Image (tube, rainbow, N blue to C red; front, side, top):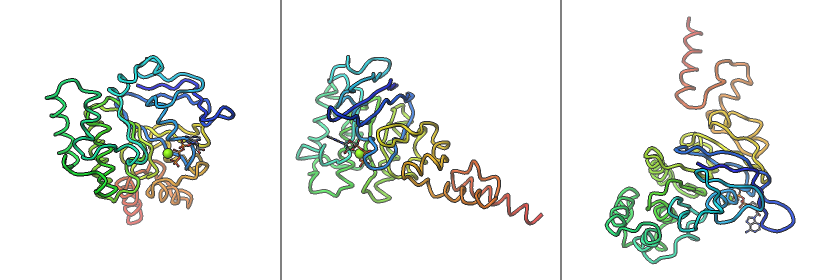
Length: 274
Ligand SMILES: Nc1ncnc2c1ncn2[C@@H]1O[C@H](COP(=O)(O)OP(=O)(O)OP(=O)(O)O)[C@@H](O)[C@H]1O
Ligand SMILES: [Mg+2]
């Protein structure tokens, strides 16, 4: 769905923030962009959405160079959640906020009302509520709702769960997962490795404006060297499996989940009892 071909980008003329990035994101996948603060994740997300343009190289969306795409076409095909929801919310009520997206992207009024009702119900939002009187978690949900209410094919989420409690986080991610199961491609910047493990298929690791690892989630999150070099810790269960391996226990090489860990430990117990 998205292809980067040798893309570089600089905010200022001297020096590039992103350097020679090439990768592909498959249609229907969930891809996590991870890396330390300042690695270039938000900059990459903005490039995909066309909010900023490459200094060199090409970005293709469904095979088409995004430089050739009209702003309105991009808005219809893509949804974007900003890192800070308060930068995104610009209307006085939740309903008006959703109308703001829908008016630009969906022609039919009945369809607009249907989509609005669906997202309000799914995220348990009230159209009459005033965003800035609500909690940070609620505002995050409003910003997410307005990013996806028009059902874009591609959803770009810049830290969708940062600052949320466990319940809010799960509600948002389960909804994103449902949309993905319905065919929406998702790219998300995420600092929480447990969420990356639970929800993504592909992981791209960034460091100093470059891609240092790119592959299937389980493979990348087990790449201790790439993670450590990017100041990232693996999910706890992978960290534990790696420690056991280092202590000479075998069979933990593929362990990524609690269920897999339990199965491995059970196998050891059975062997010890035999
Ligand atoms: N508008 C801007 N003008 C100039 N430099 C910028 C601008 N936005 C970001 N940068 C710089 O570009 C680099 C990459 O920033 P970016 O926001 O993409 O990183 P990030 O990986 O999203 O970090 P974080 O995890 O803190 O959100 C940083 O060095 C940052 O200071
Ligand atoms: Mg960022």
